Image (cartoon, rainbow, N blue to C red):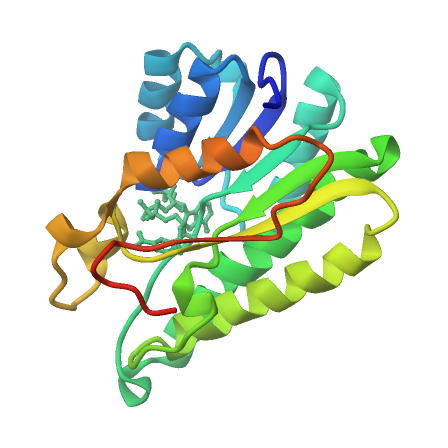
Length: 238
Ligand SMILES: NC(=O)c1ccc[n+]([C@@H]2O[C@H](COP(=O)([O-])OP(=O)(O)OC[C@H]3O[C@@H](n4cnc5c(N)ncnc54)[C@H](OP(=O)(O)O)[C@@H]3O)[C@@H](O)[C@H]2O)c1
């Protein structure tokens, strides 16, 4: 098992259901975590509860290229290249395509795809310098199989998969590992704004999703987990 002691890990979406649990678990395993999210109060409360100094917290809109670049510079100054980037940020807008406004479509692409691009663009160069690193994104199963009402969401997540597979080709002569984590429904605030009848009690718990991230961070350097699929037991789509 790969030790996490002193590993420098950035968790994007740290204010979210999955990201906050991942932050808790990785910090608890000795990783030196950096946290980013948009809600300042939630970020500060999480940092205090897991003992992360506020200097390692960044209130950042990840769709803002300049803000992401400035966060990367600050983190680089503090610790050099990070070892692991966990991107647990994103939004879900689920509705029939004719009800989807162009603004909602673009917002989804911005939050789920452009943000992932900006993060990789900012943090990959450091990993390339040392020729190693791990990047985990969470396309979810809707980045693999379609669902009615998920035109914008699946477009963003299929795009994320394609983008990361392409980047994987760019780094294949290094030990930089890229993992796409395909999660089924996870009980988190993600669903709070989605007008869909869902059974949260039958979903994966955020802690279990975070445990999958924790597991991926512990994998030995001799291999690559390119994909992981984790779905609720009675809700398997693929
Ligand atoms: N929950 C599920 O069923 C499920 C299933 C498969 C895949 N996923 C994926 O897993 C990831 C995490 O989901 P979750 O369930 O933890 O959702 P969540 O609880 O709603 O958390 C989403 C996180 O993304 C952040 N975020 C959204 N837009 C952002 C932006 N423009 N800039 C910076 N941060 C932004 C939020 O920050 P603030 O709250 O601070 O604004 C929050 O930290 C997402 O990519 C989601 O698509 C979720």
